[in-house]
Length: 162
Image (tube, rainbow, N blue to C red; front, side):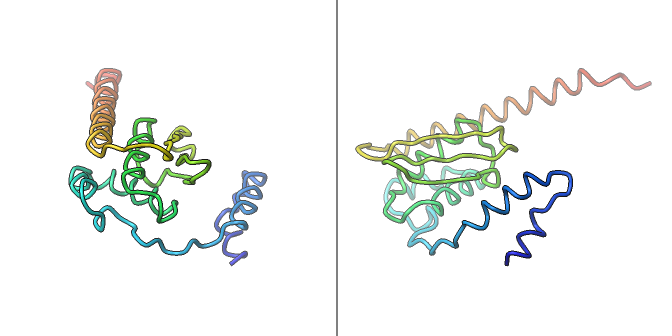
């Protein structure tokens, strides 16, 4: 396993980074399977909310869920999904770390997402799935607008071809 990890993270152009990543990976242990890994198995309002999520947002939810204890409610995970989407995360593959510490869910993304991070306080909170879905949908609309503006800028900035 150590040899495979070394081959996977070794980048001769960045030896210091490669060593740091290998050291980090050496301390990771496989997590046990959670009792529930998706909104599909959830009940009530969260299951209704699941139908409102697109594939990308479901992947983000599932990635966060897998990083948390089974005792963490799906309502809290849904709110954490909304919080990290609002912070600028675009896809689940960019999620670097997920954890529960001092009654809050922490989610951080790697450099491909611009180091997005969020903190969702869990203890003592009443979560509203509808509100979280609205936040996620707003983040999606904002991302779509940004993509359209970028495309229009690229078209107007491109030199005219003769």
